[in-house]
Amino acid sequence: IIIFVPVPQLRAYQKIQTRLVRELEKKFSGKHVVFIAQRRILPKPTRKTRTKNKQKRPRSRTLTAVHDNILEDLCYPAEIVGKRIRIKLDGSRLIKVHLDKNQQTNIEHKLDTFTAVYKKLTGKDVNFEFPDFVL
Image 1 (spheres, rainbow, N blue to C red):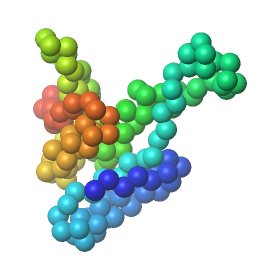
Image 2: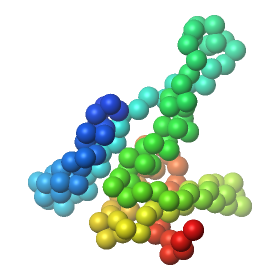
Image 3: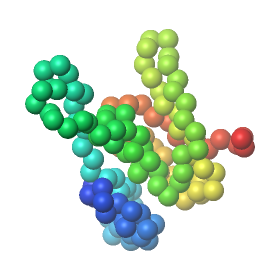
């Protein structure tokens, strides 16, 4: 179950997210619940659209920024400590996301859900792992 919240209120939701998720998962009998901010992607300005838009497109509204932020929201309360993009021989990409080992017990059972939600929202393949190495 994905719950979209307005971007300004996301911080407030994240403060109570662990308790809220626990209660909602209890209520919906074991279904996973994730909170994601409702973000907008503005199209890349082309020669034709530059004249219409008097304002510059903010970095936070770019496709890349929105997809990165969705990934951050999805993994909360775990922190993303690293990211690798693996490009296979057929040209397809696989994003490997390294999560903080501190939260492994809390979110390890949800990783398949995170992968499915991210694939549905962005169309990108992602793989979550907890690396052993320390930088």
